[in-house]
Structure formats: C-alpha cells, structure tokens
Length: 415
Image 1 (cartoon, rainbow, N blue to C red):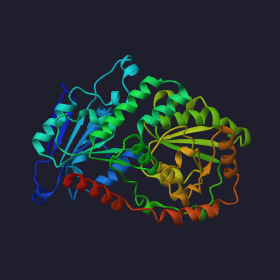
Image 2: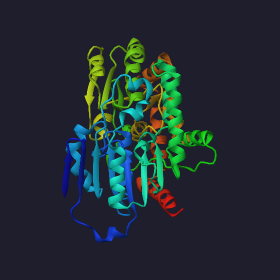
Image 3: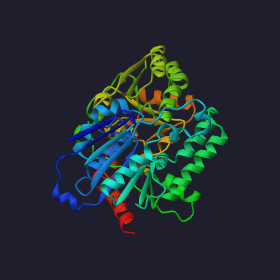
Image 4: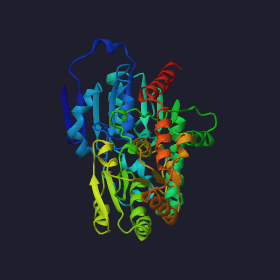
C-alpha cells in the first residue's frame, strides 16, 4: 500500500502496491462521489457501499471523493482499499458568505480549484473506460476536453429540492434556484447515460431534457436479513417514537426541527409520557441543544445496526417536509416490524404494496394523531407487520441491483 498526502492541496491518495493479474483485463472505472462509504453511516453511503462491493470483482475501480468531511474520513482511507484499487480524498475549498448568494449549495460545498487537475491526472494514469459521477454537482471536476464516457447518477433531482426548500423557508431565492436548475440540466446533457433512483426522478429528468438517456437503479434490501426480528414475537410497551437520519443532509435536519417544534408537542398533548429518540450521525450543535432543551427527548447518536434502536421503539416517524430518493431507513423500519408514520415525501420509490402500509399525514396534528394511535395499540399493527415482511421479501437484492448498474456501465462503454 502506498499513501500520499499533499497538505498544500488537501489531497490524500492511497493505492494498492500489489497488482492482481486477473483485474488487468477488467474495465477501468473512475468513480467520483462526495463521501467515503466505509463504514456506511447514511442511506446514500449504504447504497454506494452495497452496490460497489458487488462490482469490484468485475471492474477495476479507482475511487475519488470530494468530501466536506475530509478531516474525519482521511482516518478511514485505508479501509477503502478493501474494495478499491485506489482511493483519493479531496478536501473542498473554503467559501465566503457572498459565495452562498450566487453559487448553488451543492456545487459550492464540493468546489475546489484542484478538482479538474485531480481527475486529469487519474485519467492519464489509469486510462479509464468510464467515469461514474455520483451527483450533478461533481460534474464541475470533469475536464471539458474529456473523451471518456460519463455516467451521471442522481440520488435526487437537486434543483427540485432547492425549489421545495425555498417554498418552505424562503432562504434560497428564485434566482439561485434557477441557477441550480440550469447547472443540473447542463450536467445531465454532458452524460452519456443518467441514472435515477426512483421512477418519479427519472420522469422529472426526461421532462427537462428531450431525448436524454435515463435509466433507473433502485436499492437492494437484503443487508438486514441476519438481524430481522419479528415484533409479533415480543411486546414493546413503552411509548417510544424513533427518528433516524444522517443529519448532515438538510432535509433530514429540517425534518428533525419540524418534529421537535411542531409535531412532538401535539403528541405529548395526547400522551404526556411518550418519549422521542433521535438516532443517526452528523448532528450539529444547534440541533443537539434543541433536543436537550426539549421535554421527553433522548439522543442515541450513531449506531452500527438498526436492531440497536429498532428493538426499543414502538413507532418510527419520518416527518420530512422536502427531499427525494428512496428512504432506506423507512424500508429498514418496515422490515424490522415497526409501524411507520410519515409525510408523503417518504413514498417515492416504494412499491405500491409497501406504500399502503405507511401511515401518511402532512400537518403536525395529523402526524401526531397517527403516531399516538399506533402508540396506544392500533388494531391493525400485527397484520401490517406480516404484510410488510411478506412484501419486503420480494424486493431485489443488492447483487441484482448491482448487476443493473453494471449493465449501464457496459452500455456506456460499448456505445
């Protein structure tokens, strides 16, 4: 293993010393993303980890992360060599308050003057057959002269998230939303094939760019098989509500604040002894303070397996006001046997038979009424658990989903 740190440019690179002769025949992929998914601490990281671990036996993958969490993730860079032939971490540049007024947030948070040169060097060194870009905001690092085919995957249609957040908060401004939309469409047009997670996002892309090639790659769901517990076999009596998130994702942090300020008071008005448990990673100090100042709310923090938190809760709540993609945590809760209360934001990407099992409300009063009904023992809970487990067994495995991604990569390479 070779490890190289350039402190002047905030670039850390790690490569395998040994060569695997069999892999010399594999297609070479440079994979650009915004975080090191080992260990996976978010739904997006889990998805990347599960997809890529099933592809490293078919491809030579050189992994590149333009990560705002550089100072933390650099300590895990060697773990990346378990899967990848090389790992490059790049720290984005600092930015000013004025930058936030003129540059879309996702582009700004991953901007660096070294980005294009990093990718140029990797192209020169590894002669890739394909570049995979995970998120339109990273297309800024692809050289304009690049003749390597690009596959662009979108976890969300980002400009629609900006539109929704501006509608809710008024904090972005229509001009910046329009810039975000223009930049995202430009990125789609640069790609040979675009990938969406949900059919709703795929349709949104095709509405904006006529004739664009869009394919859908969803999620697998066999990563929890070994730890599934049937709630019907035990009695969870304490009125504990669970919220799980990667709080660095703005929609999740907003959902947490909405839950604490608007929904939770309504729940405690009906069940004063109810408790709310927050679990997950990357919670900022402001949200921690808000939790500490609130009544009957506990902070669990990061966890390794969903069973750690699922076993002590009675209801899972997902009160997102905006967002996109598939909510893996909702699927995990359903598989674990927890009834789920959510806004309609959690439904895209779910099969119809699973959508029917989610208790959906939009206002704080409606969300509270659904949650308290379940805490008090809704008569349909046992049948819902049985239906959920049966439906989830029909979802694709990560290996199946990985093969879908592999098929897209090969189509882009061979066209």
